[in-house]
Image (spheres, one colour):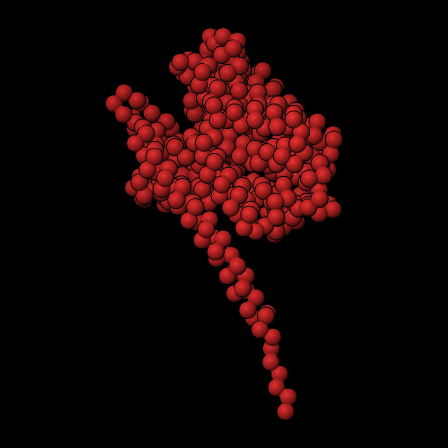
Length: 426
């Protein structure tokens, strides 16, 4: 008699796959929770701690009572002598996403919010390391944890965590863009990011230019879906946002504020007024076209990582108002620069890496004016200090074009990328 038995491997394969991910996932969550607790303990007494949630709490109250005046509410003062008065400026869909978190008290909220933020940042660093050919495994996992811990000292990350903003979550669009070309569902995170903050919509153009038409269509449909959901739940607020509030950049803050690290901020500080938008619009248009052309060119040469980052920098430059925290995109940029410098041992690349690192560590813009609200009448030296992020961004875009002309370095083609130039991050 013959007894047939089925091999155990196929049946056990899913369980084995899950088991393989349990320990790394537990490690990642543990690091994220530990960092969140440390950040809460170290900064919870700072007056700006979770300050942007003063706005989000108000917006959530509007959502819970049915909407109608989402773009009229302003945050209460942070203290007796510190008026905040910040309005809600995101699309209505963002208010819908934030509302469930508003049911938590500020301490519990900060722990949950920042734990999720550390996990998102870890995902960005993990994928960035994969893009520069660091193999999967324990070394990459530990290196990710170390980098996530160290970047807490970078000014954009520090400020985003401190005020409780959403910029690190917008970085999740990066994970989408780094997926293999043709991957199922690619474009969903880009569409969601655009639905929350509009400016990531620039990546839809990038996907079109790089002939990733299905991903571009997915991103567009997802974005339109966020608009439709918001119209269904908050019709009056949605109509007001898309017809008027979206087109009022001064709702955010005064453009000359030295914390405005965008081309518009630089231009209005140089001109001494914001009466004429023609110059900054022209610069923004040139930057938009040039950066997308460079980004698409990099992609064609097998350098999608670099292309995505160039477009991200352009997004920050052309936005009417780019707060310091918006520049969290510098995290994957530094991963790329550091790896290139270390593997090529190029002195100029080391110099560039150190320069970029110092700019985003030392806050040069803070030395431009004793009062950051007084962005007019600055000396030439102060103008330079007030424009350091913008200058660095323009420099990186220009150097990316030089890099595009030279082609990818061997350290990025030896492993981690297939013959078509796509990142093997599956």
